[in-house]
Image 1 (cartoon, rainbow, N blue to C red):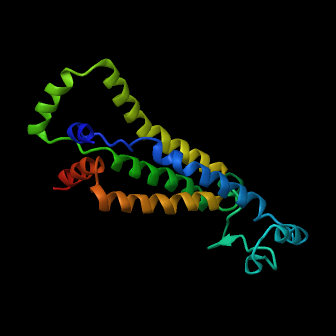
Image 2 (image 1 turned 60 degrees about the horizontal axis):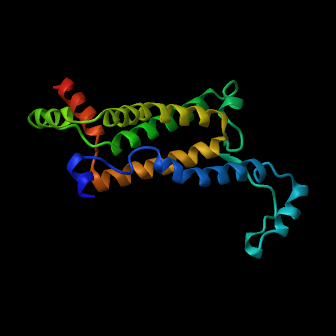
Image 3 (image 1 turned 30 degrees about the vertical axis):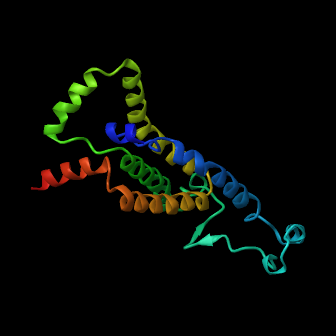
Length: 191
């Protein structure tokens, strides 16, 4: 941990938080595909595997949330309901903000010279790791936004809600992180 603190490296920055969420997302995807599309005849078969009586379903679920069909993907709905294209865009944007917050903030001008002296002694492997981390900052959110275009809307909404909670949690724990550099640039341009 001391090594991480000295060099400003966050061991959880990268794809690890995404990998932890993937089994939940796959399970939720399966639920949305199978259970949401149930007909009245399949309810009895579903109720056979439910252990508790209060969890048994008496009628098919309403699959709409604020007018959006949760079981359908934006790729199916964009011709009839163009507003659904904002959901994959927001999914990618929220993921980018969270990923950017996981990076440590860039040192200020006085500390930059010291960090350049330290980085001059770095190895080629350090450069590859840094390069890969910077590329993954942009590639993974685009990938997730692209996937959410083809997956059901309910899955994207789930991802968005938990990414927003992750952003809030990250802000409360360690502040804005790498996002503070961009906010400083925006504030400098305004003034």
